[in-house]
Length: 276
Image (cartoon, one colour):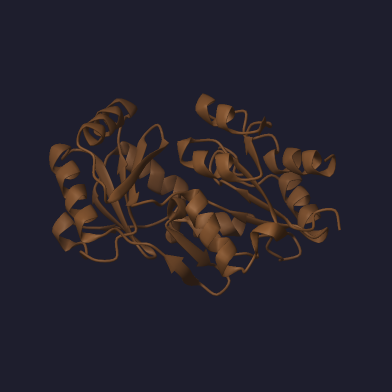
C-alpha cells in the first residue's frame, strides 16, 4: 500500500493543533487516508498525560473512531503512554541529583511559576498569569500545594513558566551553572523544561519503536514540529517538516516547511508523501 512502513509522528501544540487547540477536519481526513493506506500515526508532545487527554479526544472521527491508535510520546520524550489501555509503557524519572539541581534553580528564581509532573498528576507549587493561561488552554485541574507537599519521588519533568525575559534569565543561569543529570529545553517563549538526562522527543520515539517492535530497516519516520523541543526528532527522522509558524532554527533543521498550524499541516505532509 502507498504508506506501508511510513510512520508520521507530529508535535501537538503549534503543529497539528490549531491556535485554539483543535484538529482541522482536513487534517483528520489526511491522517485517516494515511492510516487506511498502510501508514501509522501518533504524537510526540511536551504535554504530560493529564494535559494530553484533551488532545486525544480531538482526534475522534464522527464514526466514534479515534485516529490516535498508537501510544503517544509524552513529557517531551520522557514517557510513552497508551491512552487506550490508560497505562505507561515506559517512563524516565528525574534522579535525586536532578531534583537537587531543580531546587537550586527554584531558590534562585523564587517568583517563577512551577509545575512538577508526576505520572498523571500536575503539582503547581507557584503560579502567575501565564501559568493560569497554560492550565486553561490545557483543560486540566492541577494539585495546588506548597513545594514541601510534593512527593519527592517519581518526578518526570519540571516546567518553569514566566515572561519570556524571565525565562531568558533562567536559561542563562542554567548555562552558567550546568548540571550533568538533566536535559533542559525551551518548549515555548514562556516555558522552560527540566527533564531527565539524555531525554528528548527523538529518544522517546526510539523507545516507542522498540515497544512496537518496529525495526529500523522496516520503517520510514516522518516528523513535524514548530519549536526547539522538536529539533532532535526533526534532525534524526527520515523526513522532518517544520510549520510556517515555526522558529527559524526549526525551519533550518527541518527538510521542508509546510503551512502554519491553522491551515492543514497533516494535509500538506500527506500530499507531499503521496508525491514521492
